[in-house]
Image 1: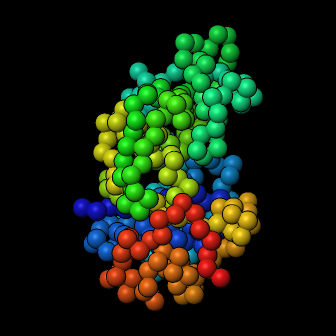
Image 2: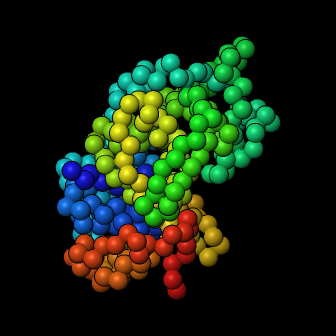
Length: 283
């Protein structure tokens, strides 16, 4: 059975960019007669804003984006992540490199702007303190087909390097948490913003190591402002309040001609979604 999800980080209220991702995920699930779950990605508590999760839930309700079952909270699922880390033990090692050391020895920048890690600590820490647990990557090309963005391919060892799956301060990074959560919740389809497209190969790598199924992926264009910046709290994105006007704007951005949710479920067509990584809202 189709099972989709919307997994916001409660760092602030929903803005039109996060609404677009939520709406696309909801419509894809409902059009398929499937389930749609909500999961709060609240592991990085320092970034979470007070009452943000409640505000997100209320806004989804006002928009009519109803979910199935109880809301999941990553902060209450730490035992699952630690169990996964134990299963990955043969493929991980401790890294003692500081950010500056990584920048000085980096092989360049990955597509998402992060430094490509050169594997400095693969053979040991050489007296440095533990900073992060990294998973080994391979030179094999990881391929997948995105339902909007088309064929994708990435060689992690060359384009990303060994990446972090646990930090010495106890934080479990997004890449591992999302793979564990999706597998445990039985997620069959992931619909999200294309700003996360370049992280998908890392998640597939972890799925293979953990022996869990790979969902089907659909990445919608990320909404950007006039300066080309992805909408976020940091770029001053305006919160949405859950109005019909905002819903129609999100439908229009996704290329869907429907005027309301009921019509949109009946006419949902991912082929109409613009095949772009990012786009601004029409004026």
